[in-house]
Length: 239
Image (cartoon, rainbow, N blue to C red):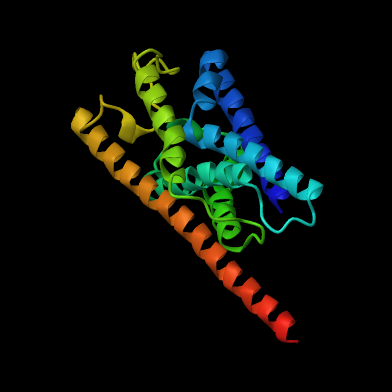
């Protein structure tokens, strides 16, 4: 299942790549800049990291079919992408779904189909898969609480890079001398930096909450598995 989910992630990123190439070509935009922007988006970076974590986990599982628990490194890699992936699903479906796009209105039927496929896989299917993996994957293990700040490193690094980069690149359409991947991160929009800071604070709190939930669920599953194993050992001892 993890390999299938990773394959879906790759296919969705590829579909989005085709869409961006088509749109940039139609509008006479710099393909280099458009693709640099595309591959710097939180959705795409998170998905590529998630694909790497899923392939690593599935490869380890094939090499250790008799293991009862995944190693700490695999669990940490999965947790690092699970928090952002779940946050991504929430943020897109709450803040960005349905936001009108002028360029999308001119897409051909084939490009529109690819765009919709990429959107739904990246923002709905994969977040739901990671939630299911967290809750039901049989070999997941709990993380120590020091894993929480580790989970926050990647999103904070991406945010720092994005806010710096936003003022250094231009909008490919030529509409502005800056470019931010999401409207709520653009300090030139309504509300300015105060609005951006509010969104960042809310999302960071949300990420910390989701990360804490990821760790708490893993630790709960560990305790439940330990109790089950203890009962089984006791039954064997008295059987």
